[in-house]
Structures are given as C-alpha cells and as structure tokens.
Length: 482
Image 1 (spheres, helix red, strand yellow):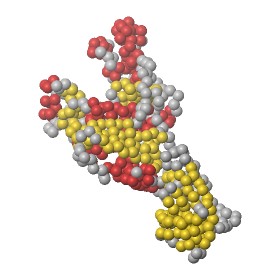
Image 2 (tube, rainbow, N blue to C red):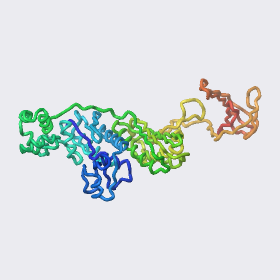
Image 3 (cartoon, rainbow, N blue to C red):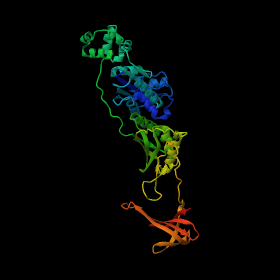
Image 4 (spheres, rainbow, N blue to C red):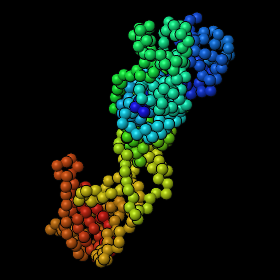
C-alpha cells in the first residue's frame, strides 16, 4: 500500500447540497450547458430515473419537481478544502488531482494504521455531508481504480486478481481501440493483459502499449505535491445581506467544520477564535473568543460564539463574515497521584468559554498574585485542570497580627506633626496613641503608570491598630490589625 486516492463521486452535487440546506432530501440535478443543449451532469438519489447526459427537458418530464442547478464554484471550493484537509490527515504528501479527488503518498506509513485512518477519514467526510471513497494500492493508478469501487475503503493487495474482471472501459481506451479489441474478443482488463505487451504495441502503436500498462496497473507518475493550509481562516459574503441568525449559523458551522478538520490534520487545536462581521453600511464588528480549553470541537465553538451573537445588535444588515482559528499545540498534562480532577471537564470548560464570550476573556480566570511588590496586584490565569493535593500544615504556627482588609479602602484625612501621623478624620477618626513606620515601596518608575506607596501602622486612643497607606491620591485605611 504505497498510494491512496480519496474521492467524492458526484462532487459538484454534494458540494452544492452541503452549501444550501434547502436542497436536503430534494430531487436535484446539476446541469451542464445552456438552453436546449443543457444536460444532466449529476442527479441526487431522490431524482429517480435520471442518468448523466440526459437532456434537461427529458429529465424534467421523468422527474416532476426536479430542481435544476448549475455548478456553484464557492460551494465546490469549500468542499474541496474539506477533502484536502482529510487527505492531509493521512499523510503530508498530497496531490490535488481535480475537483473532488486527492492522491496521497503513503510510502513508509504503517499499513494497518493507515487503513484505519482511511476508514475514519471517510466517516468524517460522510458526517460533513460529503460521501467519500478511499482506495489504496501499489501505484496511483491502482489506488484510483480501487477508489472507484470502494465501499467506502478498498485496499488492493493482489493487483492481478483485482484487475482481472474489471471492464476494459476502466483503462480509458479510445472508441477506436474499444472497437478493435472487441473484434479480438477482449472485454476485460485481464483478457488484455494476457496478451504480450509488445504484440499489443506492435498492432496498436504507442497508445496501445500505454493502454496495456494502464490495464496492468503498471502506469505510474510523480505526484505534484500541494502545500497544506498555512492559516486557518474562512470568509464569505451574503448577497443579499441577511438579518437573522439562522443563515449565519449554518454557514458558520460549515466553515468551522473545515477549519477544525484542517487543524486536526496539522496536529493543532484552536486556542482562540476571531470573528469579524461586516455590515452593508461598511462598518465592522470584531470579537475575539479565547477558549478556556483549546480544542477542535465545533459544537463548543458555536456555543461560545452564540453566547455573544444572541446579545449583539448590528446597525445594518450582515453582508460579510470572517472566522479565524488561532492554532496552538494540544496541551499534554499528567495528573499527580493525589490530584483531584474535574467531575465534568468538558462542561466546565465550555461554560467558562461561554461566560468569557459575554464578559470578555480578560475578565475570566483564576486570580494569581502578580510578580511585583505592588500591593493588590494580581493576574487572571487559566484555571487548573485538576486540584492539587493540599500542602501539609506548617511545622510552627503563624504568629503575629492579621490584617483584615477593607474592601474598598476607607479614605481618611491624616494630621501630621514632624512628618508623623498624630490624628485621623473622615470615615475613621481619633487620636493616634502610637505608630510604626513608615515602610516605603515603589516600582515601574520608567512607565507612565509607575507607583509608590508609604505604609504606617497606627494605634488609636481606643486601642485598635490600623494600617494606613499614602499614595499620590491621598491617605486610606487599608484595614484593621488584630
């Protein structure tokens, strides 16, 4: 198993039905040509009795209610990106043959794992509305032959046995060659390859020798490799613009499914999403959605985005949308022996992301003391996936007074004598009977938001001890010490 071909039969039809939800379960035909010369190119299973090449007028007579549609390039482009992402999930060496087909170089891959990966790729594409087939064989040509007959995966291990009973038309002979070979009594590939290659070439020329090679599966070629996606983004327009969420969510899901598949094929997950909504009046709305738990689950993505969209009101109708997924490497974490994990981690991370979509990602997280001497400085970090085991109690009990802070601090006026506090007035008043300090601290002097603070401990005549702080904005009582 050196090569594989991933293909979607009736590609233009399935791409269109995936793009337009109203066509589901409807008799649809993709037509080619114009006017009276138009013919059916592909027909859905609901359009019974239609065959490729049938005239449109006859097709409509055979199938009342038939929906005729031309090929839709935008739908085929998006479906092609989905197919390519699935192919890159098998190997980084992929050739895009034509719309709806990719050839993958599997040389060096484990056969058992690769066959399982092909099964998963076909199942994933089927779930996304693109029924795919996968074939594998020693050459790209044999892999293509296998893909045409797969259900949904076929691996060619014995080329001679596989080719023996296939009809001659599989090797793409010309009408003249078919007529000549039929006169010889040859109708299958096996019958042709039983003849000596040199004798066939002598009678049919170089084209006959090439036909014999195709019939034997010997024809090979060098793949023209394609580059995988470098950015994970999608954008689309609405013409005419839309006013409701329903058409937006359908297209959003379709593009998100493709982005998730591309991320998984490259070994990434999404750490954040960025959504841009363009209105018909030219204004744009931008929003970034950090994901508390990076991943590629499309349902989680959409629930996070919906939490924001349900409360959003645009001044004009929606004309353009762009979605960007920021790739990150999946986190690998090994829990400790005594760590306690979350009861339902998926629900926790999803709910956290939905809250962040409403409040803003910078307001969600676990507070952690900042790496600075600045009082009350903290940062919000991603919550831990588990609860670590409790630290043992200290050997010696903590001694000394405890500061019980006021939230917010109480503003006071301080009377000073020789630079020392002797009395308080305001929210807290009294005469100072004793004091300790000052303790001065400062930092970030090179920045516009540099800070400095002077701290005192004062005892009032009633016996209570308080902590005072003086900053550029005045004096405050930070708390009581007991």
